[in-house]
Image 1 (cartoon, one colour):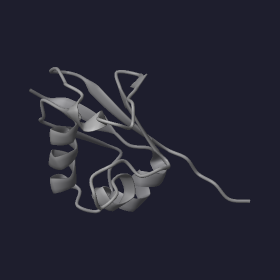
Image 2: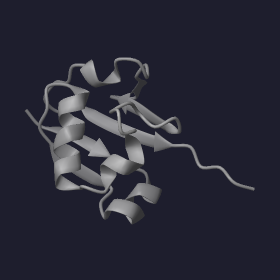
Image 3: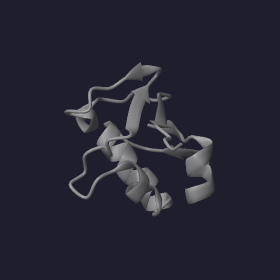
Length: 90
């Protein structure tokens, strides 16, 4: 099963890619596969305990996932995961 993880341009600069095709039957498995390919990705989207960082949203097929239990969300072949990051400053 293949899914696509799309990253915002700010992450492309940080990790060197804006898209990666990975395998996984859950979001957690897909994130683990993506982080194995792009090791710097983990620190930008996940906290040390594996939760999403506070400024990160995870969408699957344009549906925002609940932060609690996001990793257990099932995936199907061809699904698209999109990461959004809040950017602040001023």
